[in-house]
Image (cartoon, rainbow, N blue to C red; front, side, top):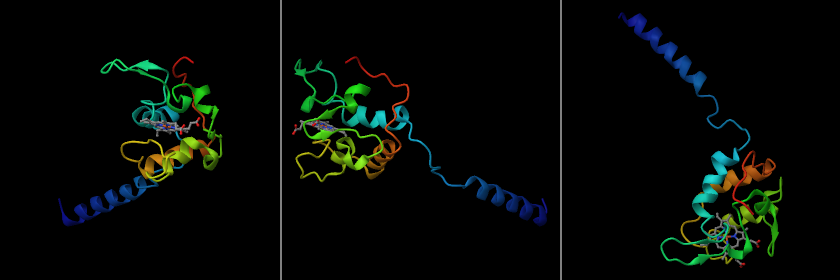
Length: 142
Ligand code: HEC
């Protein structure tokens, strides 16, 4: 290869590179089942799902705060502390707000383990702001 070809191949690669480096995070709707449900499953379901018997301890686990997040209708229901999910209004939605509270706050969720990352909190916020749509998700029986 001559120096000239090397240079022009390089320039072409640069041009391609700048084309594909368009915004990494294209603004778009947050896909509930792809982005939000995994967070809920990982960090919330342990305490907020239909009553179950813990396989290890044999203890019956009831949903904490009588709040279930494993069914779309129950997830959207209001509880003792106010609305859990207000479509399009994250600031009024406890499912979002509780994750942003400091550890020292009694209402901070999840109450044990690490706080959700800022990225996870923001995803939940965006999902609610966009209307809290769960798509085709059916969840568990009521
Ligand atoms: C280790 C158990 C545990 C985990 C994990 C947990 N919670 Fe909770 N949650 C509780 C308890 C206990 C209450 C009831 C607190 C009360 O009534 O004062 C509660 C209450 C709530 C409430 C208020 C419900 C209502 O109707 O008033 C919301 C909202 C909530 N949790 C959201 C979440 C979210 C979101 C996650 C995951 C990011 C989560 N929780 C994870 C234990 C947990």
